[in-house]
Image (cartoon, rainbow, N blue to C red; front, side, top):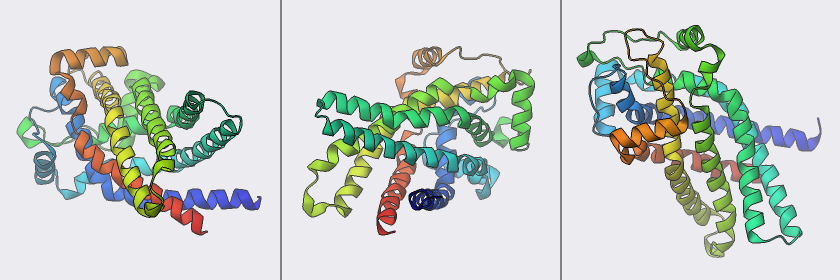
Amino acid sequence: MSFEAKGYLKGVLVAYLGVAVSRFSVAPLERIKLILQTQNELVRIGQFSGSYSGFFDCFSQVVAQEGPLSLWRGSSISYLRYFPQQFSYFAMNRLRRKLYTHRMGQSNGLLTLTLGSLAAGGLGGALWLLLLAPFDVIRTRLACDLLHASSGFTHRRFAGAWDVVRHIWKVDGIFGFFSGYMASVGALLLYRMLYFSLYDLAIPYLPREFYPMMGQHVLRFGVTVAAGWLSYPFDTLHRRIIIAAAAAEDATKPSFKYHSTFHALVQIVQNEGITALFQGSLTNIVRTVAFSIVLVGFDHIVRSL
């Protein structure tokens, strides 16, 4: 293995370790966000009869009814997918930067440069998402498998990850592990493209007296909030399609399924309003800010190696 390859692998491992620690720390936020995001779908298919008014209401009820450790339910699935995700994440970022620099040297127009940067920034994530989609499906179903006494449930539907896999395979086969895939691609592409490309476009305008510490943190925060907020409706569609698909596996529940991402969008907006697409978005902003901090830390660690 060449020196450059060893250095790159070391950087990926450092990034993975930092993200793994952060992932564990924000796992409770992730589960609360998923419950808030899909609660209307859970009510519609008969798996939940209550309503959460917001983060603190959801957090307090889940802890009271399921215990504090339940906030990490399903989080172990995330660790299985994170190494390949982070590997492709930074590999495509390096490729995007090289393409951007190459096009700059060819004196292309700003529009061409921007489109090339956007395309390269999202390509790697979209390809890897095809392989990692089953982890998202399993994680979502476990996190939204509520033990809620007031709704008449005294046990969970799924005993664990393998139980989820068994249910999906029995009813939908291999295709069941890719529920909401196109919506997740839309969310990932939009987020990644905005996150990295807006950062690259804005960094030259940062005042040098704030660079590289204060300016980078402020910029990362702003880009994270903007990208997360704009792409959040796609993520909501992704999660709700997954939950709707789960209903068909239980003969006692309604068998309604969304036919496509567009069908889900129309049905949700018509019946619940556009605000339903942003349920849990504030919790998601807090969660994603933690990842922007990890990414800044990764940049500084790599530079010091």
